Length: 160
Image (cartoon, rainbow, N blue to C red; front, side, top):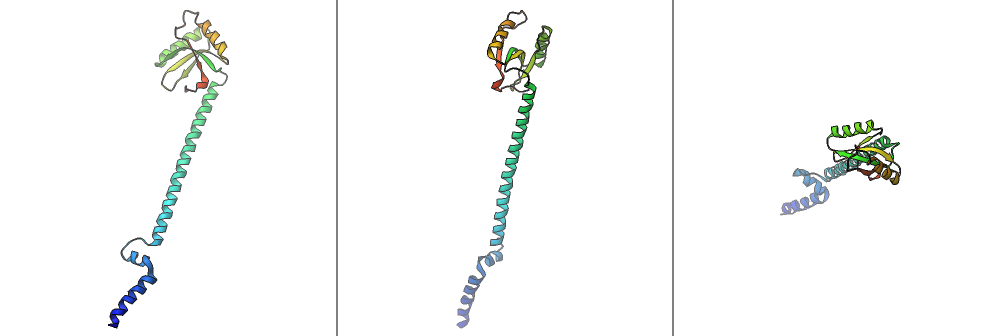
């Protein structure tokens, strides 16, 4: 009988002194060390994922800033308000309008919009009144189309 009492006492002592990790390792489950290592790896992976996301966002913002700076460099020396004589989906038509304006003494400029259209500007001015006056002056010529309008570059809806 004493042997039967000794076995439960030994099992109880084994459980108390060995802990759960012993039994988890017996059945092939991860121990507390394994679980802590997996948790640390998950934390590191999440940190790396966030850092990659931040790096990607910074690179995208830098590329956009460089593109905007390039646009501004291209626009340097031009006025804010452009007198537009036509907006064309077909690039050749914009080229024809550009050539026609050059033949008539203007220094035209083609402004490309995000929607694929190209607008041909006959002139640009820093203030709206000058642009409006120039638009009315241009409308007096026979080569001027009927749909002349003024475009404000500060709308930033164009792309070069």
